[in-house]
Amino acid sequence: MELPPHKLIVIAGPTASGKSDLAIELAHRLDGEIISADSRQVYSGMDIGTGKVLRDSESVADDEYISGGIRHHLIDIADPNEAYNISDFLRDANRVITDIRARGKQPLICGGTHFWIQALLEGTSFPAVPPDPVLRDHLSTKTADELYTLLEAQDPTRAATIDQKNPIRLIRALEIVAALGTVPSVTQHEPSTAENHSTILVLNPPKDVLRERIRIRLLNRFASGMIEEVEGLHGQGIDWERLESFGLEYRFIAQLLQSSIDQETMRIELEHAIWHYARRQLSWLRRWERQGTTLTWISDPKETMSIPL
Image 1 (cartoon, rainbow, N blue to C red):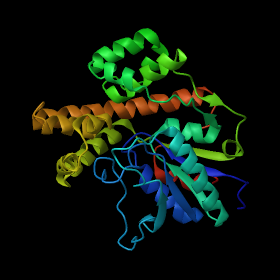
Image 2 (cartoon, helix red, strand yellow; image 1 turned 120 degrees about the horizontal axis):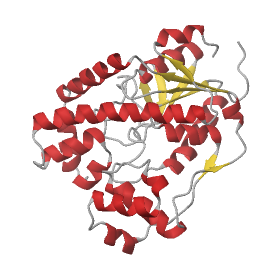
Image 3 (cartoon, helix red, strand yellow; image 1 turned 45 degrees about the vertical axis):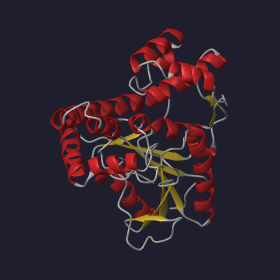
């Protein structure tokens, strides 16, 4: 069928739901290329802990990331010691979408950083608040709990959605509050053509299936050297605070390597944290749907065969 202009296919869903495999399958079916919408996979060297798709052996060019015979974009494009935020993603994703279309191919967006996907589809802008070194130095002496208490008092709306254990994000939120009085919502523009002609697939397996996938995937990541990956990143000059700011696997393993937690407790608590993260992702998607966005929920990738794409 002839695609409407500027059509995008989006594959969203909780962690471990199978988004990457489905995206590759659809890219083959639609002659497409995949744009990663994952706030951690942009960083080089963070492979196992972020669940990057394996790079094909023929993917030899530095500026190409080929997996499953499909070109992927916005993977391994930033240094872990450098900040890469939503504004960077919007700039890069729009550039890549234009390039993919210019070559007559279908862009597919795949990832679990759903706020980035929403911003891309709906057209948003964000306030440019420069860093405040003096305020940062002052706030850096406080614990994550103390920072969260401050943010909750100053901007309860932002506090309700932030990672309470991430001091870097908490400090940045407080920095914005100090400059603007609140952490503003994204600024909506006119709905883009991309939004009007997008199909958003949400892969949502049954809960028992998803939880088992999380458990098995975590065990496989440990067996593949995930602890050694984090240890190596620290050895390359990435400090513990920065590693912990990446959340989930990196936070817990960084704590293990600093002897703040034993290995068995780390494994149990990390699996629990990943499961709760998946539930939060689903809650976010349902809230997005209630705001008026059309989402197509599927429990099995085979269901896409009956969906017009």
